[in-house]
Length: 351
Image 1 (cartoon, one colour):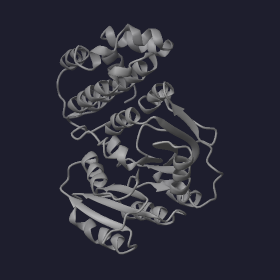
Image 2: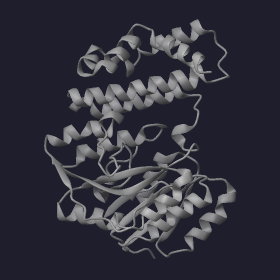
Image 3: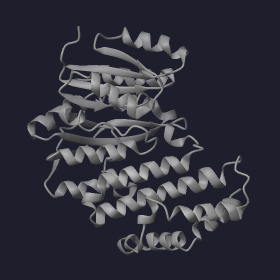
Image 4: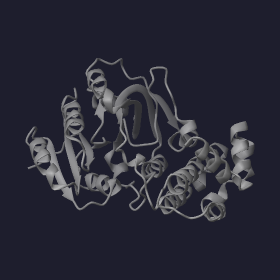
């Protein structure tokens, strides 16, 4: 019979390489804070991973494996939240590593400062340097010193969870990203802010907006609690034939989540994010996709039609006025229908 631990750590699992997955599991079992449960949601992985998951389940009585048909990371995380028993929720990806003081420090900050949500720093590590992450995850860390955001300051924090250029970076090399990493959240907030299902990219960006709306106080900490193991098999690096539909759904959901707090900072972050979707569409669907044999003029016409659609139609001159010279040039290329041509020429020159 499961007890009620203080923290529930939720890991979505889908066909993850054994060495990376075991590195992740060991970093969680090595936590200095011990009162947690580890919920692994098997998102319809191939049968060959069953033995690995069974072996992991036998490693510790606090580990629980839940199985579902393949439905994506959002459904897996939501399932984990639904079955969780802890007072606080943490999300970890199955191929990453966490610092051994992560839960201890995050919980200490959360309880001492009466906040609902604490966010620590991440550090990107390429997969061939995964041992570096594992070694650093075991080194002692300085005491966490939080910066508290509340009231109107919470709106100023929104762009940091939306656009890359607004991400908070620290002198130690760590940064606050737009995802779910290096965080600890009160369970009652987590259960009210489920991940948007059906949104294949950017679901964590949208989720963060839901969370911020329910929080009265949020803490930011510069200590590196999370090592993001970057590899080419990550879902963000996979080619998607339906990139246009995926980007449109993400953009619409993001706009809906921030439209009631759309000050200049939030607006610029929103525009930067949906413009990055345009870049993805251009390069993944039209320039580097060998299956697309349409002539250039047809690709150009389709691309030019995108900016008339929701959400890209909201990229207006206001964005250029708020931005730097790079933003102004990008806006000019975008609205003058020259962006696709420029990208096409650049792609040809680099081949």
